[in-house]
Image 1 (spheres, rainbow, N blue to C red):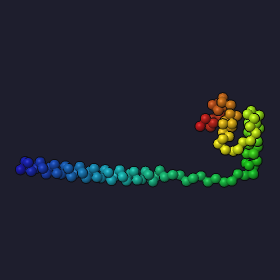
Image 2 (cartoon, rainbow, N blue to C red):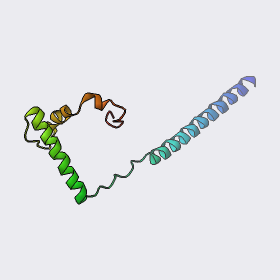
Image 3 (spheres, rainbow, N blue to C red):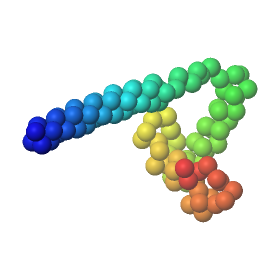
Length: 107
């Protein structure tokens, strides 16, 4: 009899442990699936065309950058490509980039 009680106790313990583990796994699966739904990508921002005022200002800024590049490097044409970046970056003085006045420049 004492041996039978021990076997029943072990079986009950194993069953309860198994049920506990299964319930814990189900709960964690539910929590993970809920967190994935909340972490969905935000919608892409919507962009609109430039206003005439913005296009005019952009053209003025491009003319200033082109004139500065021509004066400093002898480059007369900027092609509006990645190849222009070294020239444009060379126009920005390094102390300005790391200045507190240019808080967004170093980001």
